[in-house]
Amino acid sequence: MTEVLFYHLMIKPLEQVLPGLLETSLKRGWRCVVQTGSRERCEAIDSLLWTYRDDAFLPHGTVADGHAEAQPVYLTEGPENPNAASVRFLVDRAAPPDLSSYARGVFLFDGHDPEALADARAHWKTMKAAGHELTYWQQAENGRWEKKA
Image 1 (cartoon, one colour):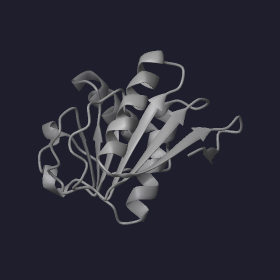
Image 2 (cartoon, rainbow, N blue to C red):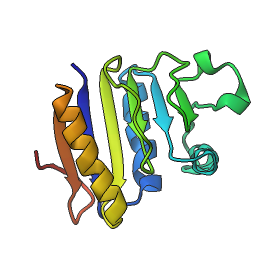
Image 3 (cartoon, rainbow, N blue to C red):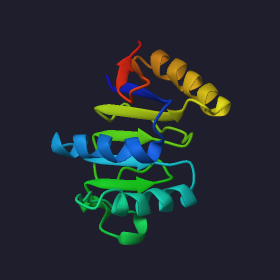
Image 4 (cartoon, rainbow, N blue to C red):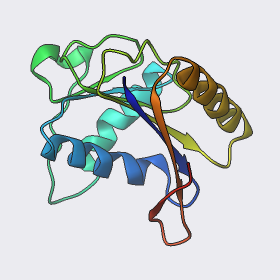
């Protein structure tokens, strides 16, 4: 059974949240795939992960970089998992592949976007019906995560 987490972004945008979640995952020894909704967004996140902090390095790559199997974090807009990741992040309304081969699936969605909210609700129902263990987290006013379900 895959643990599936839903992160409802209300205060901080994806660009401020995703790098920290990836850093935490890598510290735990997990390989990650980040699936975006489009090639353009994949390229934007690729740039972000090189520049999000002056004092940090977050090793990652895309199909353009080659050696996908060696990347601790692999960015894509498709369903592939070439680095044998155990955690799959889904952002920008990306359509999830089957998550049963992952230890963890993480949906991050914009709480100010009605379409993203509708997608998250639909994914919740699908993931619950598939028998995955679900948790729902929402950002509080201070930017911290509160477990709501």
